[in-house]
Length: 86
Image 1 (cartoon, rainbow, N blue to C red):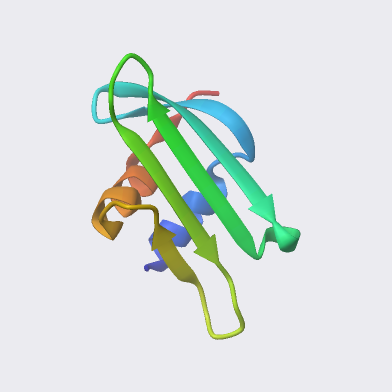
Image 2: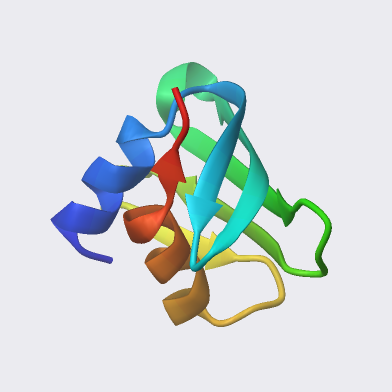
C-alpha cells in the first residue's frame, strides 16, 4: 500500500457520492470508524455489474488493506483513479 493510495482514499469524501472511473459512473460510499482508524469504501457501477469493496485499518504497526473478495490491485486502481463529481 503506497502513500499515493492512502492520500487518494483520504481525498474521497465521507458519505455517498458519484464517481467516474474507467468510462463508467459509480455510487461511491465511504464510511470511517474508530476516529478514522478504520475506513470502508464501497462502489457500485450504476447501470453495470462492477463492484468495489475494501477496508483499510490503521493499527499501530501501520496501515493494512483488506479488499473484499477481489484483488488488491483492483481496489488500489479504483481508489487512485476515480474522479469524484463535485
